[in-house]
Image 1: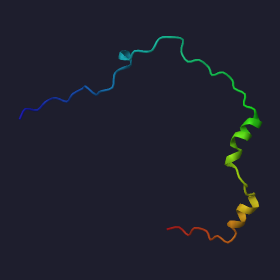
Image 2: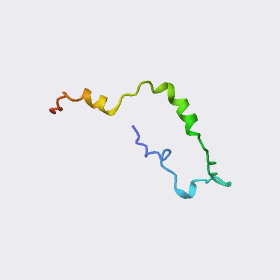
Image 3: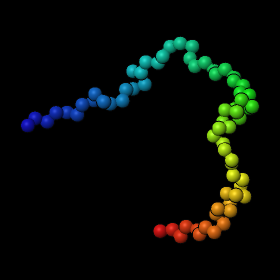
Image 4: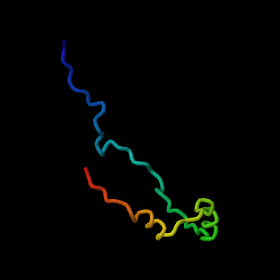
Length: 69
């Protein structure tokens, strides 16, 4: 069986071979102002009866620390 030399078909191209795009380049995004009242109204259905920090810590009061493996 005849040995074949390794193929260079998938080798990365050199920087000289890469064609760069021409044009004006990226445009900056326009500034957007979001009304905080509208944002709060949008997310209000997701936040129903949020628990206070004291309530969340009360659940962890009798927890035992993880002993590891």
